[in-house]
Every structure is written in C-alpha cells, then in structure tokens.
Image (cartoon, rainbow, N blue to C red; front, side, top):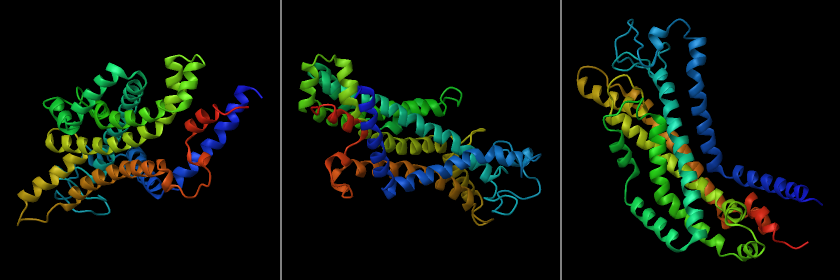
Length: 333
C-alpha cells in the first residue's frame, strides 16, 4: 500500500469523525446559524436594490437616503421595516450595510489570531530556551494590554480609508494573538513536543520545519480555532465601540446606530416617542454577531474535551484529523 493511499484511508474517516463531533454540538450549530443570517443580511442590500427598492436609491441609500414623505425618526412600517434614523436613513438598509464591515473585522481578526498564535506558540514550544522565554515575556505583557483600548487609540483621528475594517481586524487580531491566544496555543504545544513520537521524528532525521508542520501544528489547529472565535467576539465589540465613539460623518456601523438612538432619545424626551428601533437594531447586531462567534468558540472548546464526547467509544474517535494521522503514522506495520 502506497503512502498516498494509506494517508487517504486515514484522513477521510477522521474528517467525517471531526465533522460529526462539531455538528453534534448545539452551540456550534446555533453559532453557525446566526452567522448564516448575517451572511444573508450582507447580500440583502444589493438584492433589494435590484428588486423592491429599484429606482428608490434616494430613499433607501444607507448613507445618504432620505424619505421626505415621513417625519424622522419614524417608527417601523411597511415602507421602512425597521423605521428610519434621525437623519432620515432607512434603518434596515443601515443594518445590512453595517453588517459587511463588522463581519470583515471579525474574520480578519480571527485569521490574524490564528496565524499569530500558531506561529509563535509552536516556535516557543519547539525551540524552547531563550526563544520560549522571549515569547513568554511578550505574551505576558500583551495579556495586560486591553486589545480594544489599543485599537481605539490606534484609530483616533483616522478616516475609514486609513484605518478601516481590515486594519481594525488586523490590529485587534495581532494584539489579541500576541497575548491570550499565543499563551493558550503555546501551552498545548508544550504538551505535544513532550510526547514520545517527537523523539522518534527527530531520530528518524526529520528537520525542524518538517517536524513542526507534520507533528506539532496538526495538534494545535483546534486550539487556535477556539482562540480565533473568542477573539472574533472581542473584535466585533471593539468595532462597535469604535463606531459608537466616532459616530460622525457618513460612516455607518452598529455602534453609530446605537449612538444615534441614544442621542435623539435625549433630544426628543417629552416631545416625541423614543426611537427605540434604531437602538434595538444596532444593539441587536452587536449582540447577535458577537454571540455567534462566542458560541462557536465555546462549542469548539467543548468538542476538544474528550470527557464531553461520551458518544464515541474509542480513543481514535476522540481525536482530530491531524492527531489521527500523526498518531497512526507512528504505529508499526
């Protein structure tokens, strides 16, 4: 049996096992369902512009729209499903528009956290010595630095073109990745490099890069994924905070929508109804999207715990694809 065929036979069942573990966790499924709703919101704007809102860009534009036929802010109606803002913009259009940059922030942060934690965590565990000491000291220092506050400081006085969604996500992801994420992945990597098969890989003549990529990293992917999802939750909240504190000009964000509602609640107190609809839309977007990534992260953490997976009878069913391939590769015969 060739090595390629053997690898395929080992990997396919392992992938099915991992998928079964993930989809059997209610938190992961719930988080993915919420993410799917927000993905639908992201594509809703162009679809509505081409159908129901065709030719009404002056009314439903999320940045410059204004409906002169109603008094603003207007409560939800058949014309404006989530009402209008104090400036006359359709709240549902604003919600769909704000979803895109926030989602970009979360995904970018998750990617940055994954790369940073895997790179530094595996490097510290494998090299040890002064490399491990340096990375550990940097990690300890970054744990004490609130990533959200640091991103806010970096973004003060900068326009969206200079410090937009991608920059916010990268900044938060790198800062969080250097702190809690790297500390967690490094701890898991230390456990991996202490296993007997690592000595066997070194004795067989494997180089450092080959050992790390084939025998260390596969055991760390799931841990990095958990940290990425938890970090994405913080990135959504950080983006909302930036939007709330910078709620001026033409930018549209969940935080700005909350700011608009709070501001006009004060102006209209005792004169007109409180514009609860825009606050609810903004706060709901922040809460639900953050909750989605948090549920996925918590679900992945539970799926990583063998004690939580009582549905599988053997140890082989409790390991992830990378672990199955790495461990079985050490078996004789």
